[in-house]
Length: 249
Image (cartoon, rainbow, N blue to C red; front, side):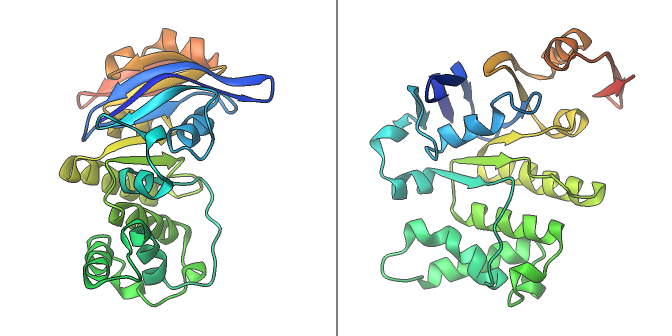
């Protein structure tokens, strides 16, 4: 479980986030939505303490992350950035980096076992010794997820996990995330732009506008009026196979 209370962030005198408060339970996937520049990526960077909030608190399973060391935070929260700098490392070594918060002197047998197991689960075993910069975009994203999963986090933060992926890889990535959230009881917070992808895979929805939380709740909050208020667009919400679908235009 994660609880964010009165979180604000500013660059100098310019406030980017204004008093954000919410909580999400274990196993839930929360979609963070809104226009470009609304503060979505800044929010998850503050939750992970990559950026230091100007006020507010973040607690994971009751533990305030301000009281934790960077190593301890990495045992509670894992993060997959929107863009990944690819270096000349193998797939296995890239995934093994996710176990770094648990290393003593070096990787142990359990660390290696967990990495091999995760590579198998994500159908990456055949690429184990390939260099990561030789992979396709979808394969790289799976490697980044594998690294995040072997951290054994309580909270997983994803910044546009389907960015620049074709539809097939988008759905594969979202299926992997949803399955991991349910089976491993991970709370997932992910920045998304595709409303229909969010409606298909998320349990809760956070809409941010101008750095403020405009709305937060389950799928019942996603209405034509809400989308007009957040995005200034006209959209119809229809039900197909008991799932909400956004029709724009």
